Length: 398
Image (cartoon, rainbow, N blue to C red; front, side, top):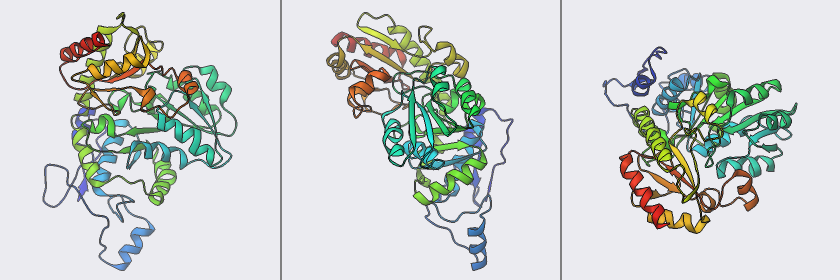
């Protein structure tokens, strides 16, 4: 068995279909699924040698690595422009491992304040419980980043587009601040997607994805991945994940490989629908605000266009009338489904105040701009005219 040689001059859509394929002696077309927990050695000497130092295409135990999982890691590393990657059981396993694998008591982290609720929990409670000092800042203020970093700052953490308020952070500028103190720049790039943004080119050191979102994009599996330099992935991240157990299932990896074949097509179609929906409802009298990085009215529109060229697949509405109006709106939608996922082929609507960010205090939500009337719209692959009509009739009901 062998992998397809990494061909760096392939374009992204070609890599999404072919990169990293390992074919067995049977020469199958689809990627094989290696549903095994362990591997057999031809001799005791071979077992000893592999535990001492496994080769590129040698495996020990599926918690450590698996051929199907390795195909996924190689494929996403190729489109991200990363030296290496390690796949995890979920997006939050990836977020936690990216941080915990490199931090110890007494270290300092600076993080953008506007985050997904579970990311905020990891930083605000879990890491601080183990003696890591965390400072939260307004991620859109470069002065705030400069004021927060210290000589013992080991990492800075941010979402390239924040969930759910869609703030866009100037990654290149923040990375320059972090480099001055030798801090590792970790970017959760879920909303920007590997199709629209390559944050390593902007100065990030480590990229994190919830593969549950656009990479699967069909509501089937949980998965995550951390990407970075080979030294970081193999010497810092891999030992942590091998021994703490946040491994990706081979079957999950196979589904993600199949999802990646259509990733570019899906994301571009979803981003176009998000743009049309945002433009259709900007200025609607029933809304306090439409938030979408692709709109010129967005405070960080120029940064978004410089980093992504498009506005992403998610738009946020703030309804007049607060939570009651938001609930009436959600309940009146006919095509959008109410769920807390995003990046799916199906259009999804979420009320963050009462779901993804419900554990935060009112003060924390106010600081992040998560208002009671705010709803997050993840645009799917339905006809955009149908989606616009669905939103219009739901606004009338609200």
